[in-house]
Length: 384
Image 1 (tube, helix red, strand yellow):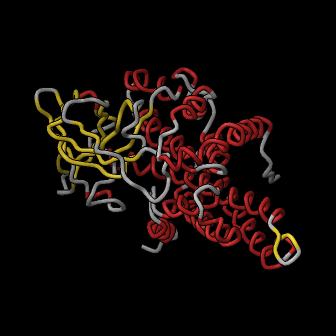
Image 2: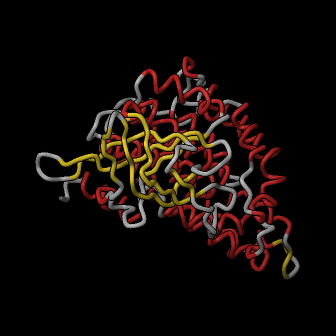
């Protein structure tokens, strides 16, 4: 029997996060956004709720849930603000998940408890100034010297990398050559404050203004040899897996933004009057909102299916790419239509749809561009 209803546990989580987003985040996040300020107080409350520990085992301080639970939380947060949602998404799927998936027992016990509690944030250093989608073009290098990895290079657009509570960044680096002459890429844990590890001033961004994003530099940065994460030479393969999972999370976040656009437009269409009627009485507005709702519905089903396949242990690369592509398109289209419905007010930062419009575009870029998703889908269909 096919049943798309959430079970009681999932629904209780969804409602809890929904209520938190509406009561704790929505009233204040606009001011944080205008000031381009990281919302430490909100993040602390999210940590106290256990959101950063949702998909991790209780033995490491987690909540013993699963990845779909994280996705539900991301969707509800993004209905109000994407900066807060992506802070959670990156902290869990990019910061803590690599350590959970590939770390030694010692590494898990050292880093996961504080990451699961939200008292600390982790980051994932893959993208470089000269290589985003082409992650295999990594130029950052790490060599062994006297029991230490010595790292030189730079990373760009790294989320959660420069907050006051950032504790560790996982960095991909070239550690040698493969037998076929290709690059041997490994992943290495670099604690915040390590000499030679410099965090540049935060970027000035179009959107996600409450999210923390920096360029990182490594200049003869030394960390112990045991900070290798997973197998030497498997760093690239490991993070392809992490990115597949992360695409489902970004799809959930995108659905949240798209749903938030519907929420705001329904309210506004019932209040705003023009030519003697509320604008929601006019078919032009009705059709726009109907199309917006249809996009949300379709995109939500896509990420639900991708998450279900992942949790069953089935191959899910194609479904994750479809979910990410469909959901980010829905977010961008809905944000554009919402701004049009709001008219001049939609161009003002004080209105949520203005933030949604600014935040939506990066969803078609981050964790694999829309073009990369199409490439992955085609490849999974056998179009090599």
